[in-house]
Amino acid sequence: MHDDDFEHEHYYEQGDPTEMALATGELVRLTTVGIDVGSSTSHLMFSVLFLKRQGEALSSRYVVVLREVAYRSPVLLTPYTPDNMIDARKLGDFVHESYYAAGLKPKEVDSGAIILTGEALKRENARAIAETIAGESGRFVCATAGHNLEAVLAAHGSGAAALSYQTGQTILNVDVGGGTTKLALIHDGEIVGTAAVNVGGRLVARDGEGRLVRIEPAARLVAEELGIQLELGSHPEPHLFEKLAGKLAEVLVEVVQLSAAGHHHHHGHDHNGDGHHHDELSPLAGELMLTPRLHSHHNVDAITFSGGVSEFLYEREDRDFGDLGRHLADAVRRRIAGGELPAPLEQSGERIRATAIGASQFTVQVSGNTIAVSKPKLLPIHNLPVVHPRLPRGESVQPLAIAQAIRQAYQRLDLVPGEQRIALALTWNGTPSYESLYNLAAGIKRGLEPGLAAGHPLVVVFNSDCANNIGHILRDDLQVTNDVISIDGIELKEFDFIDIGEVIQPAMAVPVVVKSLVFPALSAQHGEILD
Image 1 (cartoon, rainbow, N blue to C red):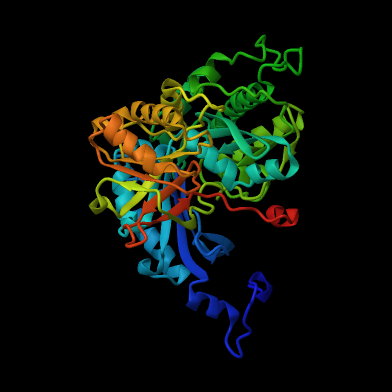
Image 2 (cartoon, rainbow, N blue to C red):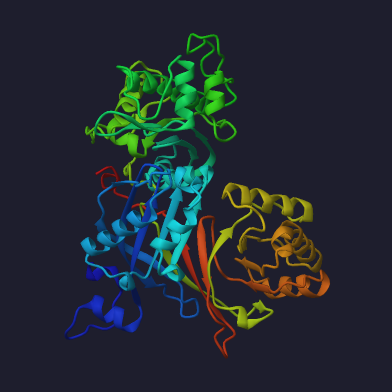
């Protein structure tokens, strides 16, 4: 850290300015860990964050000024038990070894995030995994990422979102993992669409003796199309992996072309030579899609790849893990060389570690004097996922439209309404007339119905000062019987998790710790991202 990161009013005779700043609370140091458990690989990344208090006395908001990677664990092939469940005990051991290698004890880590993705979610013991690893779970954010959220995490973690923001380009990030490929369409740094397809490097795998030990359902579909039978424990026929990978690469490129082509046809001619026009997928690709298809409303300027298979694609890795990874990358590379990508290939930064990359960043904010908390005993609350609806613009606030926006926000995060407690974050800049506040409150009540029915407290966080009024309207006029925690003056966005601390007397303020998943603000020097 350089002295000039801080403005000094005093010159201390002795002592390091960093130490002084830490001692006075001007600077806070946090050690965080990101743990990514995927269907094929798992790894950890420890970071040290320095947060600096922002100048204004009343807003004691801290922001991250420096983030250093303290330790990257080796990448582990995710362990499975014989009955095909993820082996939580082995994973736990790996995590402990990684702490040891990083020279850290669990209690020295201030916070962290465990992100379960892909197959890891399907396994019945996803919860067990999270709990085994997060013995300290109070301090951990545990995010289970479904296909859409995973696509977003990869787009940010890989650096593709930052690249799009810096260059103003529209980028399609293609994250090719072990079981699935996630696509994210990024326009000016913002993710405008996501999709996932069941193409990955570990849909089949063989053991040291060359016998098939893993065959995922998607691999059977592809084999069927090729007229090949797959049997566990058998020795595969020669070139089986190349053939499967070839077909998967064809599907992947087809989906990429469709996602980038969107509604306007860049090419009138038929690209694949198989009679399929751009806006319809072949039957196999259709069957392998895991989400609705993605359409771009913008011309795609560049395509970036991340995920484990991209390590082979960008030629950083050449070991064979007994799976399709290398073959799939080769087959995709051949298609790229043949000019089949709808836009040029670019590099974005992090590849296999894209999902785990910074599983946590923090800001600490304080919500001030217009809060409404129906029962102070409810606080503190930890790790509420933030649901951030995109409110319709303009002055008129229609309860139905707000409820609809809330439901869509749940969907983007792969959350099921009513299943867990959440915090609703609203960025609202309308005129605070009683009528518009009442409509806003009515929309909130309607959009959060499943959660209210489940008895959860209604937690709502505003950027502007209307928390107190909204809190009262919800309880008094709209007869919400659940507890209401309504706070304001806090800026939140999607993928944040928040802790709301106890009410501080006599100031009647509550501290709010905001933990953002993943997205480091990238430095302006392009060289740094591209290393």
